[in-house]
Amino acid sequence: MTLFEVSETDRLLTTTRSVRRRLDLDRPVPREIVEETLEIAVQAPTANNHQNWRWLVISEPAVKEKIAEMTRASWLFHRNDVWTNAGRRRNTPQARRNNESVVALAETIARVPILVIPCVLGRPPDIEAIDAAWRERMSTKPPEDPGHHVRLGPMRASIFYGSIFPAIWSFQLALRSRGLGSTITCMHIPHERQVGELLGIPSGVTQVCMIPVAYTVGTDFRPADRARAKERTYWERWEA
Image 1 (cartoon, one colour):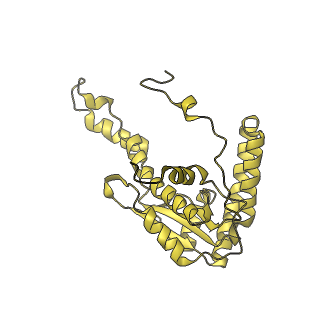
Image 2 (cartoon, one colour):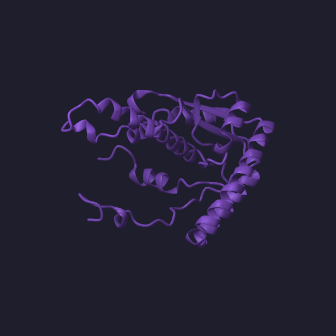
Image 3 (tube, rainbow, N blue to C red):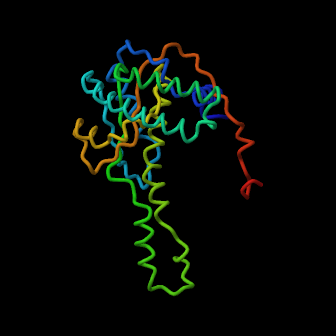
């Protein structure tokens, strides 16, 4: 006996796409829909039950336009860097379609009804500083102490971001189930300080990404063309 209808659950999970070009820019998104889906999102797992996420929802056209200006500037720098340094790797039909999709979002993001910025209280861990402090702490321990083989920095970084992205994905799934689309974009992050000043976000708060939210033009989304998990999964040992 299954707790949920597996086929419908799987359809939701496999057809929730990054929607950029099929966002309905003219249909308003009710505030209650955003609040309802965020209530679902915060049920996602969070490390040590910190619940240290915050969500900033933006609907004012003038504010969205200012954010869009910074987003477009960042995209131009990112695009030039990506196509220069990894041109051959990205110059495939799928990569070109993705690039066209990102360009479309950069050009229209000010018109997207809702922009959501997920935030985490605090700043990302400094991996090198954490590891250096741990080495200093272990300097008085005998050489055979197993603590000499421990590195805490990567774990702290994993915990920091691992506490927000499950909630972000739950938010996107909840939107999809209600006929809305979304995508994760980080194009405003190079302007994090300026965006923070614009929106009153304290400097000690990390803006993780931005999620444009809108109803979709049509709902016929399909699973993406992905390599099969079986081809990328190892059991017991790497590449075994």
